[in-house]
Length: 294
Image (cartoon, rainbow, N blue to C red):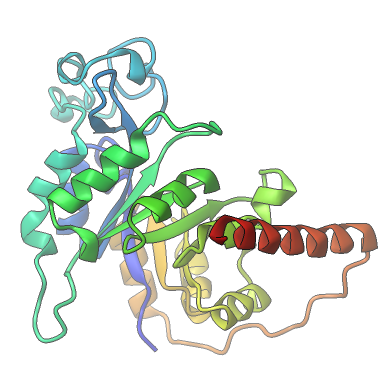
């Protein structure tokens, strides 16, 4: 059984400032198979790598990311908040990340698969687009990066637009139990046609893993920093584990013998109304997909 891929969550963000070039380089040095990062637009429509919609938590700046040009964002310190040795670290653009990691991403013999994977998470909760999807899709095409990029989002509408712009791009649908039911149960996945599902790790058990595999979805889960939990997920044959500590999680998985997963069946659902609503939502999603394809 192959081990799951290990992706550094915002890089090796336990030790380095998240979503910086230092964090991405360190993830590679610590043995990660790739990195996960967050992207949004600057005021002048450049994809920049930062998680929050505002600057205060991870930089010495103030206000919304989208209110600043990329040159203004480049003046900010994005590392000192983590530790003094990272003072002077800057917010990277997505293009800079592709460039810095380019030697890690070249195809390898004999299968031609890339050595590294970049999971680009698109940040937006709105119904309407701000143009982020188009800028990211264009950049991936310019860099000829289709083989080593997976685009993910909590927003299924963003992924649907990515699919329409470039069906070749691999897509991952993010969700968690804290979201409304229509999102947390991935009812809109039929609109997205994702290659992978990205549930929070607590949502995955044997039944879920079997359900996803039967539908040919890869399972990429987040954010796992406990060795025992990583071993449990590896035994369930997830495809990728996103973690702040790629070295710790890799060691844990490699040191843990594979076991048969817990196959204890779940009790039947007691909420008949919820079950009926879920079936109705899936039928409605099919109708919407059919209408969109007409």
